[in-house]
Each structure stands twice: as structure tokens, then as C-alpha cells.
Image: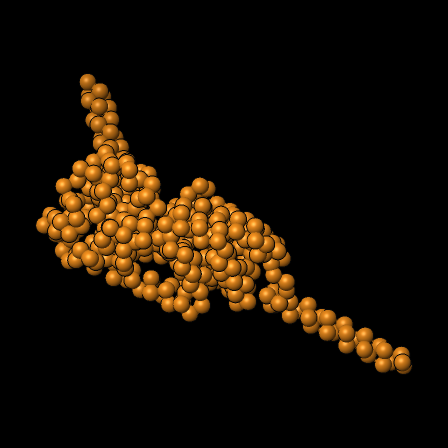
Length: 351
């Protein structure tokens, strides 16, 4: 082969390699994925419901060899899940960092606790739905949701609803309130499920909401369920009527969503979606979700996008009545103390 031709071929090969390297730098999805462990940010403390949920998928993927790289759970708790969701939003959009967050991603933005929401992420999939139970204490005078809601209309703002303000369980209460024209609750901050139970049993609140799994755990502690907020009766509690059956047009539940940073390449989103789909098809995941009283639903593609859009639209009709801010008592007290000090000084000087 002539030296000139050989030299030309080498030049062309070098150019081809250079172009390929440039393409890979601009389109990382063309490289092998995943190249390293996939980190799932759980924006709540270890041991909580969301953490347990994600670790079910982590174990199923590992035991069934569904991914060449491990899933690593990273708990980034604080501020109602917004610290973790912000960390996920700011992560490199290469598919190696994702977020698992339920409807809290909607409610935090709507309530004003975060200035970002679903539109700032790429939805991967929704896996699992849990219902909501409206409950009162065992000695409550209300034996049906219909009676309680009539009282909320007759005496607005008198019934105290214990909830976690700005969180999904608060919005369950808001949907319940909207479902009966004229009904008004007085919302008070109580915190998580165990704290809501303590407040209910202690007589500090008149009613509250629990997930189906929480109610299963707490029902023997002296509480009474009035309704679920599901479209139809929950298989776990077929004797418990829905709110709609009792004349209250309220439907709400909790869906677990998986999100990727905005700009994550489409083929990596597809890979992650298929990974979650394969995990959902395992007996292990289905059995564990059944134990948590969660419906093993899976949504992806157009169905997922419709659900994301619909849940955002549902919140548009919910109005928030935030508590009136307290006056700056510390400054008022400091001012009074200052005035008294001046008067004492003046009296001493005159004496």
C-alpha cells in the first residue's frame, strides 16, 4: 500500500475517533449506562415509610440481578422533603442520581414551601398507590363522615383537624373540606402519623387522616375510621365506606413517583423505567407492597404524563387559608422593657 494512501487512512481514522469523542461528550447517553451506582435520594429520614418503600425496590433489583450497578439509597431529610428534592433537582442529569418522592412534590410547591415542583423534573414512573382513612377517637360522638361534615358546616372552624401542614395528609384534609360545600376545619400542626395518633387519643384534635398502612397499625389503639378517600372501597377494609358513598365529593390518595433531574437523556429514562417495571413484576415487590396495603399500580409513558398533569391541575382548585401570623412579640416585649428602663433611669436621676 502506498505511503500516501496509508497516511490518509490514518488521518481519516483519527478524525473519526475525534468526532466520536466529541459526540460522546455532547451526548453522554450514547455511552454505557449505568457506569456507576444509581443513587436514589429519599428526602426523608431512614426508617420512614418512603425509605422502607425504596429499599423494597433496592433489594428486589439486587436479588434478581436486574441492574449491573447497585441502587444506593441516600436519605436527605429535612423541611418536609424539600431539602432532598432540591438536591435531586440540582444533580447532574445523567441518570445516576434520581429521586423517589410521592405527592409531596406537588403539595410543597402549592403550599409555598418550595419554588420548584413536578415541572422541574423528568418523571420516570409511578409505582404504588396508598389510600387515606379519615379517623376520629373511639369515644367521638361522630359515627359517620356524613354526621361529622354536617357539623363542620354548622360550626365552621370549630372541628380541629390534626395534620402536617403543607404535606400530602394536609391536602387530603383540604380535599375533604372542599368535598362538602360550606364545611370548614381548623387545621393544626401535629406532624407524622404517630404524633397525629397521640393528639387524637389525647383529645387535642377532633379528627385526622392516616394512610391505610398507618390505620392498620393504629386501629387497635382506640380510634374509629369513618371513611376512605378512595374511588372505591379499599380491599383491606371492604366494610369501610368511601367519602363519596356518604355524600362527600372527596377523592385523594398517595402515589409514589420516581423523578430524574431535568434534562436527563430520554434513553436513560427508558432504562430506569424498565428497571422499575421489572422490579414491580417480581413476587417480592408485590408481596411487600401488599403488606403495606399499597396497590401495585405502575404508570409510565403517556399514562404517567397524564397523571402528573392531572394531579397538578387538581390542586388548582384548592385554596389555602394560612394561619394569621402572630405579632412580633419578642420585639414588643423588648420595647416595653426598654421604655421601663428609661423611666427607671429618669426617676433615679430626678431623685
